[in-house]
Image 1 (spheres, rainbow, N blue to C red):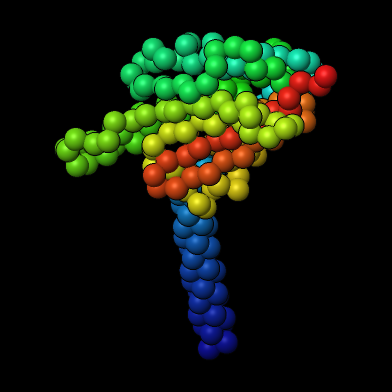
Image 2: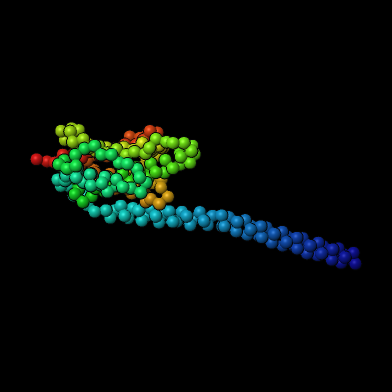
Length: 232
């Protein structure tokens, strides 16, 4: 009788322990599910954003790869440059663009159809940088600021082999931390940019034997475009 009672007690204890283990497992599973759900809700937007970013990068490189071939020919770069300046002189941001140089008659080796895009990209970047920095500074200080300004200069006597075009702005400059990346495809600090403007510009200039460089400080940025003089 005592043996039977002990067996019954043991069975009740085993059932109780099994129940506790089952309950504990269910609780742990429920907790794990809640943790995963919380992680999933937090991670999903980041994963989607990363996938969108990768798709954007792929698309940008596709555009870069499909750029037309650079073809070198004799081009009146002064006329090309003055035409671009005339186009952007009445920009929406009302930022003045001053030009120092001839309106025509300076011939270089460049791509007839694409060289204007180089000047457009640099001038448009300067306008956007000046507009953004001037607005932000004005909101912070509520004081009159130095008027934004862009100066374009064409030096046809830079050297016996090259002419020099400089495009300067008096904006806040390019941060030192990103200066080494600005010609890299898909690099941009703009929310609505694809980061190809300067990369394409570099490709166009170098494709005909030219060079493109820049200098930047807290007082502004200057881009220099060097193009080979026409061959005789």
